[in-house]
Length: 105
Image (cartoon, rainbow, N blue to C red; front, top):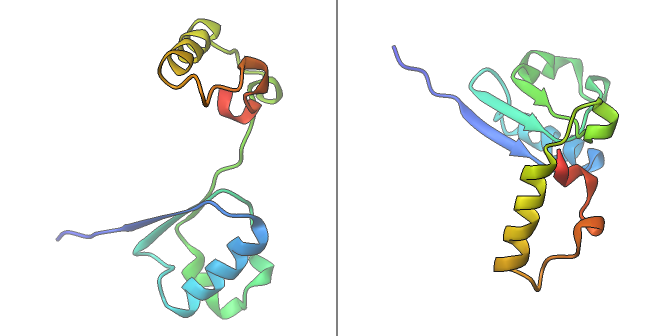
């Protein structure tokens, strides 16, 4: 027997995440056949209890930077990426000090 799962990646602020999920619940596209990956945490209390069984299959990924997670950074790889960026798209390279720290980890 083969089973298919539909994967939905939702990258939105928490206010929109709740609205989108509520619409998805109303349209029956949340549940065991769907894997939702969210970029913001949500409170399950914001949904009607009758929808709780359908809220299975939701994974929340929270952003972290290396300094907060006490993770080492590979500066050799980072500098190589900066060099490639500067070489191929110099007009978009903001300088290494202007790159968002979330982009480094």
